[in-house]
Image (cartoon, rainbow, N blue to C red; front, side):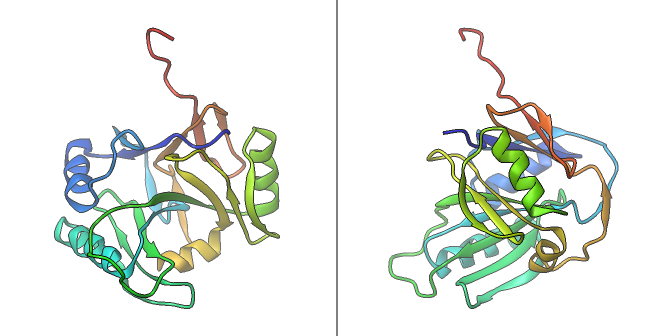
Length: 209
């Protein structure tokens, strides 16, 4: 199945960003990579990354660790109709949703991440959905022109599409923004640039391939 293998965050200081992500989330650096960039960017970059956990206590643990490591709180962790979650912004500017669909703790608290979801804020969900389908991604869930979730291989990054204005509201930031998105997708279906300017690269081939 075609999927998003990893994402590359383009940051001003890769060393500082690496320290933050290790301390805050303990992220797998094969799935969330870093590279230097001084491309101009301002305001909302048009995407969020979600770390999905098994229970509220895990969300709280990640939330505290992120703030201790230097993140800014955009939304406190709290219950909602769909579950429990909060939003933080990393020092490099990337917005992270920390979420779970459950509302009660059932096992000892950890900082285990079950899934990473990339949500792209797009102008036309249906058009972007068609664009990605034509490049080999398979739709897992679709709710008209509001939300699309693509299926992916185990261990991959789940890609979802949301209206840009709605995603900014979820993130707790103004919708305005411009310049570089400061993120690149990596997938076998690349390379391409999608209708909203998000870039996808093909995976680097190893010397023996």
